[in-house]
Image (cartoon, rainbow, N blue to C red; front, top):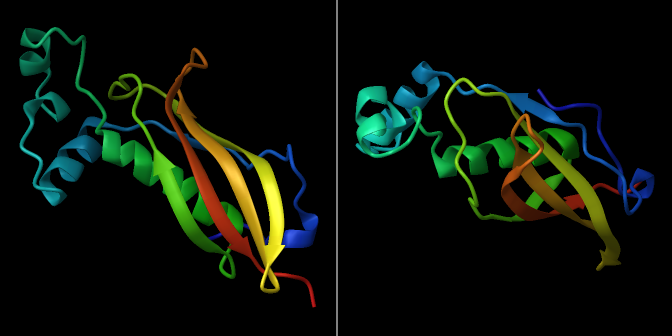
Length: 144
């Protein structure tokens, strides 16, 4: 369920998106591996990840992208449209560690009567390191 509908006229550059908190569990990572047909053991087998030099099971990069998509689509509400989303995985996220998805409005404009908003978005760990930076462009409804 989306949050209360946000309208283009209510958005300002510098405005923060409501944060989205995640704590990916072993079960979630195993299921994500299964549903995406990703057999890489670093996403579900701790003993194996230790032999690869990691300290625990690693959260999938595309799953972090899905978290960012959820952050944005929840914010824009039922009438908003996610037009474009891009991200890059820059560092490792580990299973059972809290992650926070955040965003900030960086630009607004109108085109053909539609209200466009560009946002900087990211996933960060408890230490505040931006593990997965990205950008999103959305179209928000205009007030009548």
